[in-house]
Image 1 (spheres, rainbow, N blue to C red):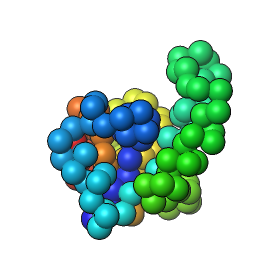
Image 2 (image 1 turned 30 degrees about the vertical axis):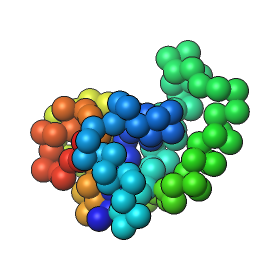
Image 3 (image 1 turned 45 degrees about the vertical axis):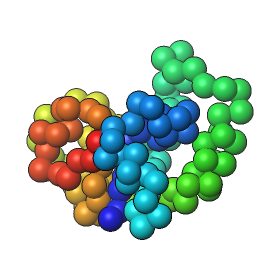
Length: 128
């Protein structure tokens, strides 16, 4: 199974799995699960830090890289097809980062690991 981790899912997994849902923890710990993190999520982290809406350790860049390597989480780059998929995506969700991750998951045929109930309105496989 290919799983795209929402931004909060990655941050919670890095900080301990207590906030992750039961199925998310199971998938995260399953070596057969292919885990991905979108550059859209990384962009979201950077924006929120710059706005003062998110506080992470001073060495957060190294921590994320280290944890992604330890857990075999792959980067999902933003592709032209992902952006084109946004054109026909209904506006169930207004957050541009979440919308892009939904489009990526749809385009790449991935399950999205998220607790966000609004994302569940899309015709997409959700894991939590």
